[in-house]
Image (cartoon, rainbow, N blue to C red; front, side, top):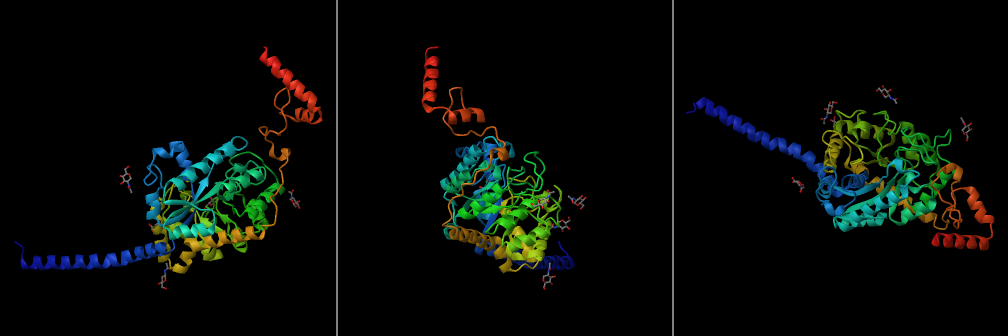
Length: 433
Ligand SMILES: *[C@@H]1O[C@H](CO)[C@@H](O)[C@H](O)[C@H]1NC(C)=O
Ligand SMILES: *[C@@H]1O[C@H](CO)[C@@H](O)[C@H](O)[C@H]1NC(C)=O
Ligand SMILES: *[C@@H]1O[C@H](CO)[C@@H](O)[C@H](O)[C@H]1NC(C)=O
Ligand SMILES: *[C@@H]1O[C@H](CO)[C@@H](O)[C@H](O)[C@H]1NC(C)=O
Ligand SMILES: *[C@@H]1O[C@H](CO)[C@@H](O)[C@H](O)[C@H]1NC(C)=O
């Protein structure tokens, strides 16, 4: 039996519980709801995701073996993209730097293929190549896929290859990954290739940027060295992006962007899409959380304003993510934190998607203005590219494939009749051997 006193005590306790259960969720939910409401109206365009790389590593691109609605061992699948209000995902085509001078172009094609398959075989996805298609996909409640190449080594220093990638739907390319290319410099010193002094964007590099402007392909400066970034910002006719980079002032990693470069980016009307990788957020693998991420947003806003900021999560590419932001379903947590820090809904609508749409529109406008410019016929010199795998397309010599200048010059100067005769004799001798 309860005494009268303890019954009263229990009653007050119950009242307290009711009070808190009414009160707590209202304030708690309302902030969370506000983030979800905002993201329903302005769903996210995310700048960088390496799911295609994981499909390669884990499944050798055999899409038939998995259900993309729910994929284990990764942080990205359709269910979680939807839960995170991700409406557009830039999917990276990334082939390791080790493929440079080897089969980078084949691997790039295969990664484009897997993204195209993923985005056409699943009705939740839609492959888009224009701003208008991207906007239409939102009205249809689809997740739009934009294909972006990560690392200029994918084009093997060839503008025709760049143009063909555009034809396959590629709408963005970062000039480098962790390796220099023969024409642009990486922020990383990991690979000891194409070292140059004082030439961070060569004449050919400038031709790449010009051709991307002409095609309407977004130039991405994440992974480029600061010198290359600056040279590109000065040369590009269209706004450029950092698809997945954060603030160097907050975390002094070479992949992040210093304030002076942010100022140049603002002059270019470009966009920095903040990377969530713990290493770039807190400068350590451990202990990062959503507050640290928000510090990057606050700082960049202080330096250049909210009109030039976006989000580029880097899921599947990076190894560790802040506590509370472990997969693509968690983006609302970040928006909730920025709301808590008094970012206005207008600023966040810009960050979530309007800034990217503006940049993509301007890139298309520059393309339209260049419509009478012919495709560039600039070639890189063999000395610059230093690639023994490059074949000079000439008729084969009877002594085997022309692998050096002497055999190709023989082909050039020799009489075609003699050459055909020699070839026939060679074939006959093989036949009767
Ligand atoms: C995904 O699959 C796992 C088991 O493989 C299951 O536990 C989980 O509930 C599934 N998630 C969704 C969103 O379907
Ligand atoms: C770098 O190039 C600039 C102009 O192209 C030149 O003025 C400068 O002397 C060069 N510096 C070095 C270290 O080569
Ligand atoms: C980054 O900052 C830390 C201290 O915060 C310092 O020890 C380190 O040398 C700095 N790194 C660079 C590249 O400036
Ligand atoms: C994040 O971690 C810092 C300590 O590094 C702490 O002060 C802050 O409250 C944490 N934020 C959240 C949202 O947990
Ligand atoms: C947000 O604004 C309110 C009202 O002006 C203020 O009391 C609060 O300290 C601000 N919060 C932050 C994190 O700046």
